[in-house]
Image 1 (cartoon, helix red, strand yellow):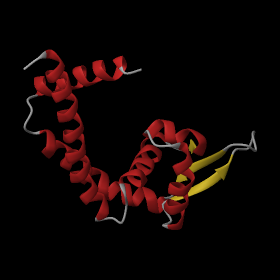
Image 2 (cartoon, rainbow, N blue to C red):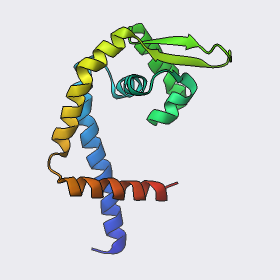
Image 3 (tube, rainbow, N blue to C red):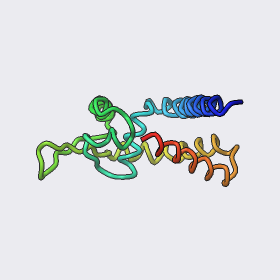
Amino acid sequence: MSLENRKLKAFTVLLRSAQSVQEATKKDFANYSLNQTEFAVLDLLYHKGDQPIQVIGKKILIASSSITYVVDKLEEKGYVSRKACPTDRRITYASITELGKQLMNQIFPEHVKKIEELFEVLTDEETDNMIYLLKKVGFNSK
């Protein structure tokens, strides 16, 4: 296989693998009436605390135009609330509610288990190599 074909093959395998992993986790989130983006926002707020709505998109890698919609949906479900910034009226924070924390306390350990199952085919060394190599490609993409 030529070098060009190997690089193309690596690209295709990377995308298909990522898609398969997303599909596997999507099913789990659906059990809790969440989509992947809603889970990502809850995960961020659960682990990092209140976040300005304007920066959530950058942190979870989705378009900023989608964040307001996602926060609205999570607010309707009672998992997130909005808080005005006391020092800057232009900034609004998203904050996880007690109900949101209860949900994450329930589902996050299951999410971790699912990820561990997906990666159990790799040794620790293979996992470390994969992380290193994917970061290398990612940094080269910038």
